[in-house]
Image (tube, rainbow, N blue to C red):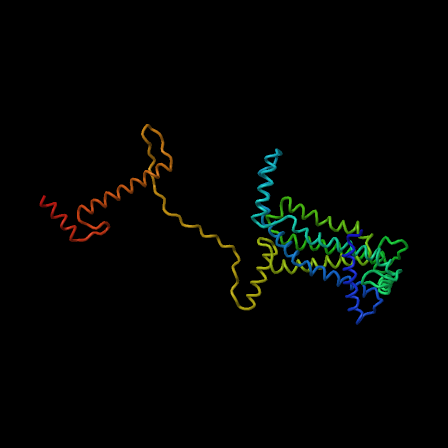
Length: 363
C-alpha cells in the first residue's frame, strides 16, 4: 500500500488546475507551461504553511536570544559526566526553553511538512506520469492525454520535466539544465544562510554550539543538493529551487521589517527609520534601550550590633526585632507622658507649654 497516494493525487490535481489556467495564453503542450504549473504548486504549498514559517521564525529568534543563558548552563556543567549533573543540566535547559517559549524542533516543522510533498512529486513525475501516459485510465485528475502532454513536453532541446541529470541516454541539454538549477539552488541557500540568517543573529548568538550549527548548515545544505540533485527529475529540481527562492524572499521581508534585537539587521533597520524621518524633517528616534527604574525601598532601621546575655552574638533578625520593640516602647512612653500632661499626642500648643512652665515654677 502506497501511503503517499493521497498526496500524489492532490499534487497532480493542483498541477492540472494551473496547467488549465496557463493554457489560456500559453501552449498547452509546452514544457514551460508544465514547468510553471510546478511553480504554481510550490506557491500553493508555501502559502499554506506560512503560519508554520512564522512560528519557525519566532522560535528561532527566541533560541537566539537565550543563547547566552544556554552557554552559561553548559559552562556550569562542563566536565561533569555523572548522571545527576546531566539530569540537572537538561532540566535547567528545558526551563530556559519554557520561559522563552522556544523550541529547538520548531525550525524543522516547515521542512518536515514539505518532505511528503517533495517525495510525492518525485514519485508522480518519475513513476506515475510515464505509466499514466500509456494507460487509458491515467492517474486521478491526470488523464491519459494530459499525461502524454506532460511526459513529452519539451523545455529546451529534448529535455522534459521527467528527465534528470542521470537519465540514461539523456542529452547534453538535460545535463546543462540540471546543473544550472542545482547551482542556483546552492547559491540561493548560501545567500539565505549567510546574508540573512547570520546577519539577523545577535552578537551573543554568534558563539557557542548554536553558531557552530548555523555554520555547519551553511555548507552542508549546498553539499546535499550537489549529492542528491543529479538523480532528481527536472520538475522536482524546479520545485526545490522555487521553494528556496520563496524562503529567501520571505525571510528577507521579515528580517528587514522585524529584525532580531541586538543584531546587525536591527541596526540597519534603525538607520533606515531615522533616514526616512530626516527626509520628512522629523527628529531622529533614540533606539538606545532605557534602563528599568529600580523600585525605591523603605529606609531600613539601623541597628547597632549588640550581644545578648552570656556573650552570644545576636542575629540580624533578632537585632531588628529588638529595635522595633524599643521604638514601640519609646512611642508608648511619649504617649503616656502627653496624656499625663493633658496634651493631645503629636500636637503642641503655646498655651499648654506655658501652663507646663508655670506649674514647674510653682513647684
